[in-house]
Image (cartoon, rainbow, N blue to C red; front, side):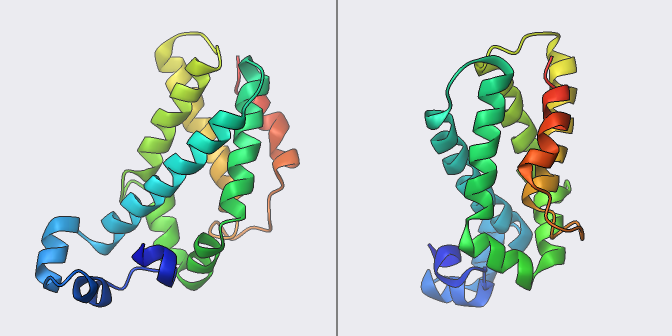
Length: 165
């Protein structure tokens, strides 16, 4: 709720709102980046569930439908856009690196989407395809963090489709 209200996480203000010390907040959360990771993953899970509920078809078509819906939700999220614009280095660190579990969780979720959609094959190969798929999707939804102009989903779709056996 703090993030949604402020489009950022101010650890001093959050500790005050929770009536705990800043030290207690850091002991519980680990770091500001870790807390951002949890917030972004919670939002991502909601978006994935909503997109999954809307997804139609099977196989590659279902995966791409879900991905497009997810990308639209992320790019339409005002607080996320505002945070990325205000703190691009923090956003890159939290969303795109191993500094938090966001990327690993996204790869695991993408593997689950592949399997739920009927994409079959060697699980380790599908995991690698999931990794590549997530990196491409990150290029679409977080292009501003990567320092490139907006990457339209339609431009990325052939590359995404090529990763689907």
